[in-house]
Amino acid sequence: MSTLSPDDKNSSPSVSPTVAVIDLQDNLRRLDRLANLGLVSASLAHEIKNGLVSINVFIELLLQKGEDLDMTTMVRRELKRIDALVTQMLRFAAPKPKQFAAVHIHELLDHSVRLLEHQMSGSLITLERRYQAENDLLRADESQLQQAVMNLLLNAVEAVGSNGALTISTETVTCNDGVRRLKISIRDTGTGITQENLAHLYEPFFTTKKNGTGLGLSITRRIVEEHRGVIEVQSEAGNGSTFIISLLAD
Image (cartoon, rainbow, N blue to C red; front, side):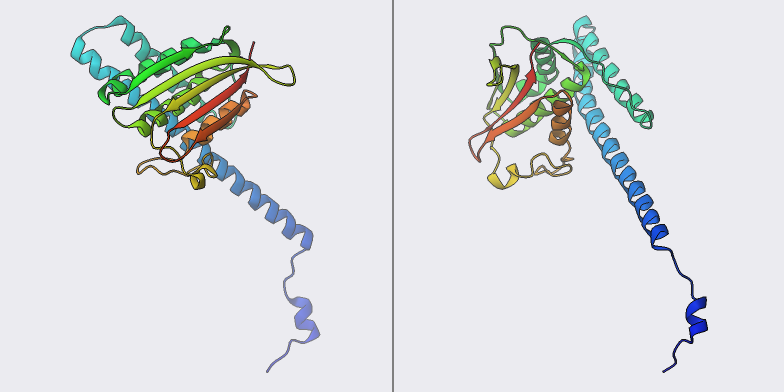
């Protein structure tokens, strides 16, 4: 067996521990940026898909019924929202700050429901509104908040299937710390969520749907948290689910 001479050992290439650590950190940062880029791209694609579903439904209705100014206005609004999402993707290196303004939650909820009316009526899903919040005004990014609401409504409609019921309610509560919050609850009579799945509900790419992306709820939680709010769920298998968004009231 041959052995290395002292000269051989001294001539072998060596890497400074400091340089190795720096290279490792750079590689980790690159991987992190790529992972974030992939998640953002997938998230935006998910939202674009949701918007296109609603638009396709209304386009079909417009073709069947002829010109309808109200529906045309709604289609234009959704197209504008999708355009904003695509713009955000193109400007990923310098994301546009959120546009917080006064938003009437009841109007936002009604608009979101209208986008799904055709789908709900086709599945014979009954809808009940319980708007009990005395003041539904708060500061929010309307487009972002609508994404969160639409994700929850779409999940509820899919969970209910046929001949089910959907209830949307609002209320204003004063917490123990004296802070007033506006709560939005979306309840469905669907299949519910198992305890095992509840633990993974907001994880990106976790889904129990055959063709699901597993991004809807993770996007929703991120949007709610960026609005300094919280989201919780009450559910058990076979007894439906209730998702509750709690936001700072104006």
